Length: 151
Length: 223
Image (cartoon, each protein chain N blue to C red):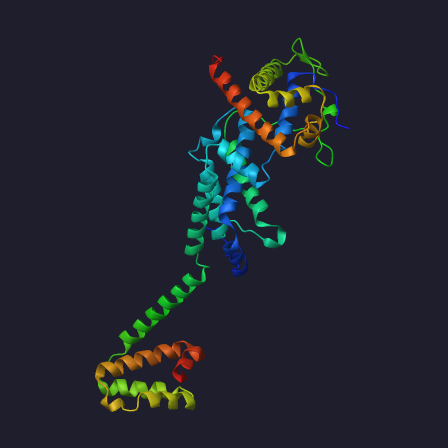
């Protein structure tokens, strides 16, 4: 049954068409493209532009794993620089500080580290300061950081 | 100041990364166009551009806010596209409501959303009095006269819009003859597909809106 009372006034006719127009939301891909073309847009260009906007936002998001990894790397570098800059003093003090750090390591880690740096006496002052900075940095990272020593 | 931004979960972010944004963007812009034309037909205005916003801006803003987590999509509550369309609709509604001279009329509908056209009771305005009113109200009379003129102008625009367009004329004729105002009933009556009827109706609305707007602009200002 498709019949109803015909609209009798202009107002009623307009209301019926208001209602009818509200039911014409574009649903199929063909309808979507048709609406865009009628509005003077190229559907392909619209798709490309919207995709570009979204991909750029996704790439710049802090939730993107690349950005997370980059942020973690930058933080680590900053901490290492900070540790290195604080590793100052004369050779004797630096050697003492290194010994102090070594006492904080597990025996296995200490063993592994001393295998890498057997001849601390022959190392230059700069190398010792650098080693102390790295050790202090690894200590700040906790067990995760110290695991690197075993690698 | 508290920020509205909430952190997206990695799981939601991963789903947003997997989405086909080209296709979504097209659908959103077509939807925005359709929804904006609804306001333009009803109010006769071009107010959607009043704040310097274009529909492209509206759609891009919604996409960016969704990805940044400023508007949080919850996959547990439904798919992405309908949720994004709701966001676009909210933006356009807000723009339309902030515009002057917005006209909105609610329709009587049943629980399924069917229009109860036979139940519409139009108050009769005669000699400065609405049916049921006890005394003339000059302000109401002025509003009624304006509404009456507005309806006449839009009806006229509808008839002018179909001039020389036989496929559109068929649609208006079918409604005037008493066809139920649903695309599927029009399709049945006219032996066409629902998609074809929808295309005709959108074209009719666009043509009628343009005619109505031109007539409004041509009309001398009375205030």
